[in-house]
Length: 410
Image (cartoon, rainbow, N blue to C red):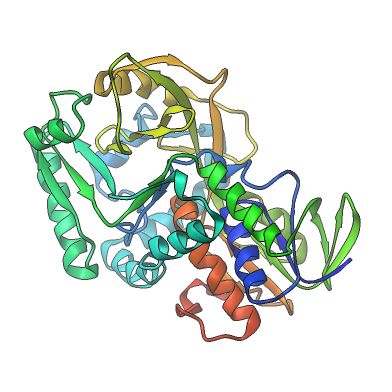
């Protein structure tokens, strides 16, 4: 079979790219080793982060670095055996996280973020997926007055620089909005322009079903068999495309490295577990415990508890010690009941050292395109990335300047 475009990767970025290409009339095959929405896109916190204009930076203050070095912090853990491999990446990450550089990165990054909610809502409407959408934002809660006040100053800066709205809630207002949360909290911030979803995997599957309703093809195949110009092996035989898009998240390097690209990619792994709620308890929206580095959010399967960052090699054995560390904190914050899942889920966020995704043409191969490296904002930026790739492939004026996201910057 021949197609205009082969999209490799069935996560939110790949599916969104396939949808936008098909909407523009191109014949598209979406290829992955399993059905869409079953890997990293399944297990995230479900946030569509309009407030996320500053990507998550590497800490630069000495007390925080010393705390992380002890490898007992609830929000960040690391595999000591991985450090020799990932140290060069971490050094570059630290370099780009300097305040002046981070601010410059935000000026580029915000051009993607500003479209995240509108692009998702457009796809949600067309895919008939509104049942999973929650509007009205999400909460960042605080145990200490000083931490709450510092976060307010940061939110005020984001509002001045990028027009990101927020509401500050004192303890009384927070208890009114979320009466099941601990009464010991001092306050919270709500990022009102952001959305969330109650089942990220189902959302991706709904987008994929919409893609198929447009005449797109979803095929099970082995993306690592990609060969110029451009073929890939699937369960239905070898298929061919004029263009190929690599949108494989943390596995993108399994395709790009054989083609000669040495892009500085690493992963931040994370875990989740679902819980029932105690009788009478209810959580209305996602809640991030900013001081302890975990999030709880109501999902279709129950209350999802997601962990912070585990710095490790992508394929190393699972070590869900962070989940064990934060579960007692989560139970103190909200009345969780029994675990729903048999084992913790683990995913890997694909990261670049400058905190920006790779979006655009491959520097050394004609008609090959990259769309990966979205770190914590894969769900957030999937639809706008898909739109941008589709505009570049079809020669339409891009809605966002793609230059800062080019692979040629490395």
